[in-house]
Image (spheres, helix red, strand yellow):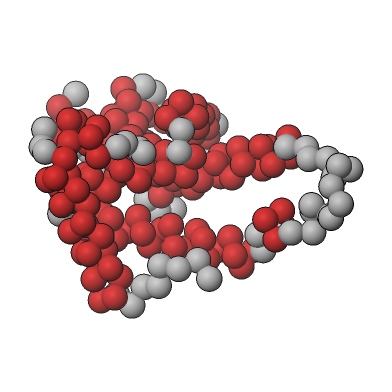
Length: 197
């Protein structure tokens, strides 16, 4: 088991396909925090995030067992794409299930930008910004990254963050302040625009 922990993702995938079921457990544990944090950041609901995370790895296992995984890049990026697609599927289903009647209003409710679909370009910009924010967050010092993930990806209050990290609320707030300053600086240094338009 200890030997497996140092194996590359690609080797663990090969081992799993060859019949070593323990390899998938190591892969899940290795990438759980990053993928789960991303899902929580997108859906803002712990239980829903857990469901999507489980569904993502069910699909991973199914694809690997069916021999349809092509080793064309990073395993974690592939799983992240699966999770991202599941999130989009969830929001599409939600959108299709929401029915609003226009009969009781004098003006046309549906003639509003809030009901219009994002164009492909707008969705691409949104995806790009989210990807760049995630990359910048990963560049932060550990204690600042931890606070950002807890606050924005896990939706914890500063009181909860302080309790979970064993620091005062002021320290947690200070770390967030420095994290935001560092994110702005990192974005400027890399000439990254973090606006959706």
